[in-house]
Image 1 (cartoon, rainbow, N blue to C red):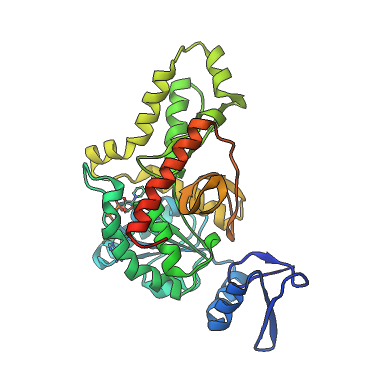
Image 2 (spheres, rainbow, N blue to C red; image 1 turned 180 degrees about the vertical axis):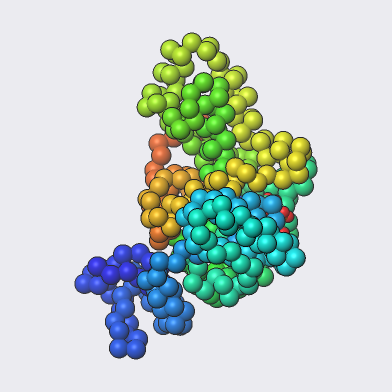
Length: 366
Ligand code: NAD
């Protein structure tokens, strides 16, 4: 077995038909598309392979605003990287944040923190995109789409030209912009994905844990679909300490009814609106969600997280980026899991996909 230098997936050189020779070395590919990309610009992919041989763990953050800077701070505290680079059109903001972060260095594990440019993406393990216009009070995420798609038209080709291993999208509307980034980068789908409903799932688990009076680590459940108004709570697969939620409710004694479920899900779905109304932005939980995803990638964890990625027929949905439980490792997306949904969850999921498909068609992305 060897690794396809373009998409990073394992490939059996005796099984595949796609090979090429460059500078006396033979390379094998899983698809003809990967082979053609390599032949078009071999040095771009080889630079990346050389960087992988080192133990450098480098993350570039595009957009040093509330989310980008709080993520950098949380990442620095986590000790899982040794180089963080902040890039922003507002250079003063990036410089101010880098100075402030660097002054914490005597208190944390060693890490290099710099202001940078797109060239810093060349040997990065991960580029996290938070750049864009943020959601204003009363504005839906989908209202933002045209403004942020235009910003992506500028930044994604510059990132992709440097061939970082993985591009992670945070900017909203995250599902649409993940599709936009995939198209603009020309990357295979395993290397571009969005934070999706990782944050919503954390909100769901933490609110349920409070209601059930248990530790949130013992609540296992998912929010799937759009990161936004049409997201779907998967009540039918929710467990508390391994017990199905329906069974758990029947003996826990707190006597919550189905209205409580609706109310709780309402709080999950509207959390961002409420927080933005009160403090102007959200930053802490999304930063922890980002560090969780970063760890899954850099430590090759094979963690199951509800990131947003391009579906290709799973759940009966095609050509739309949506969140479902997905295995994440150092090569990005390994596999999308097939979660069994009940009838109403499936209907809601398809509605979510339909809403996003309509927007992608308007943007001429599909
Ligand atoms: P912010 O306004 O504080 O920061 C955005 C930064 O992007 C600004 O510093 C701006 O100068 C920079 N920027 C704009 N255009 C740029 C470009 N072309 N190149 C480089 N930098 C550029 O906003 P924020 O609160 O940090 O939110 C950032 C994004 O993250 C928003 O779209 C927000 O909706 C989204 N968000 C997503 C989630 C999620 O779960 N996916 C959660 C929270 C926020």
